Length: 177
Length: 275
Image (cartoon, rainbow over all chains, first blue to last red; front, top):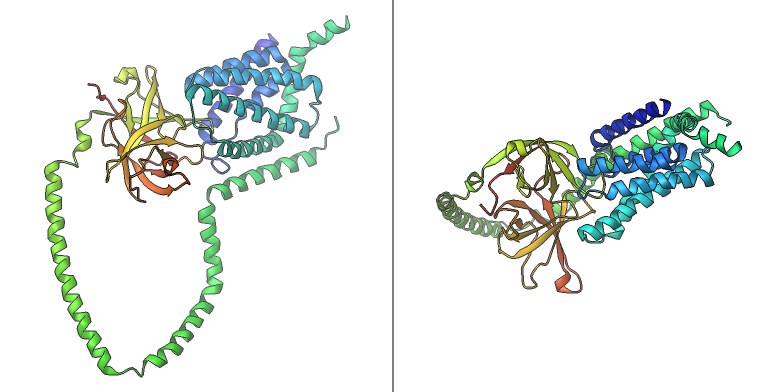
């Protein structure tokens, strides 16, 4: 029951982020570049709730975004799913209790996600390759995402630990007994 | 976990301030600069004006002693020139009026009236930095089909890539995946304009013929080749021609007529090229 409620909570926060992203961050940009809050959301799910949920929800949310606003269906689905998987890997190797490690995680994952999407798009849609312009946009996006992480850090910590309690207690118990 | 709440809140407030400042400065740099320029000018201008006044006074003294005869001659010449200019102006006005009547005969103004259009509003914009897609509030229920052309009052917007019952997705011409076959309206040279990542109001025009003369300010319109966009829809004007070492590689930057950041109302052309 708790799992069900927390999944509903995640979906509601996804919808809130979607509304923010398509209405507020459209004009609240740094040099015309908007942040990508979906990466932060999916990475946190992967970090705190495990790779299963991160992968599945990342895939579903990415597909939703592709269907509503995408050029090609599937690219951001696959890449957001990958972000969820990376979250589990980062959880095993790094500490989540530090503001700077979370910032660095989000910066790295943003770079991986956007370059993955760009490479897929180049292959599928036969785009012109504009590496310098792409890197410019990517750097500003990483900066914006990390600044937002500083603001959201305490919220991420509190909600993340609640999620961890719901989804990861079983694993720990089976390890001990 | 050792948490210092005061420090945390201060950090959050500082980051919010930094973000707001970044947003303001990066998006309104031109306005901000002119504002600062105004303030600076208040201090500098009186001194500048004084210097110029002094300079004029000093240089004016030498010309005061010029003979009156030369001035008379000059005056006569200027009067002659003036009458000539007035005559040519009258001729030009006659030509202008003739041109307007001819244009009316050709029905240039009624170009857009032969298309059946459906008005629509933009209800959603792209959330990605690397593509430019908008969602409009008409769909199959209103008779919209895939590959129909979308225009705004000032020019071409894009074409429809997918339709649902009540909404449809429009891939705009500034999207990096779009390429439109178009022509320069003065010389009829065919070029291809593509969206870029660089700027949301700039298109890159490539495949310019080597012998073509491309000038700044030339207007660019669709050529009708390719089967999606009808002929003769305005796209924008050439902002800059970039010459490279090899003339076949040269390209031009085209400024779009439509402002994609403020786009809110569009028209969908329902009779496609094939029909």
